[in-house]
Length: 93
Image (cartoon, rainbow, N blue to C red):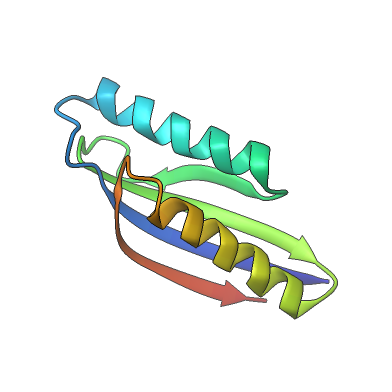
C-alpha cells in the first residue's frame, strides 16, 4: 500500500472575513472531492482570513498512480482562480 500526503499553502487575496475565506475553501475542497478520489481538508491556519493550509491524502497500490493523482490535484488548485498557490509539499509513504 502506497500513501501520498500533500500539504498545500494558499493565499486568498479576495477574502476580507473568515466567512469569505471559508466559502472559498469549501468551494475548492468540494470540487476536488467530487472530481478525484482523494481525501482533502483544511488542516491549519483556520483563524487567518487570507491564508489556508489544505491536506490531501491518496492511497493506492502504485507509486505512479499516487504521484499522478497528487499532480492533478495541485494543477486543479493552482488554476482554480479563487486562491493563489503559495507552496506545496508531497510525501510518499
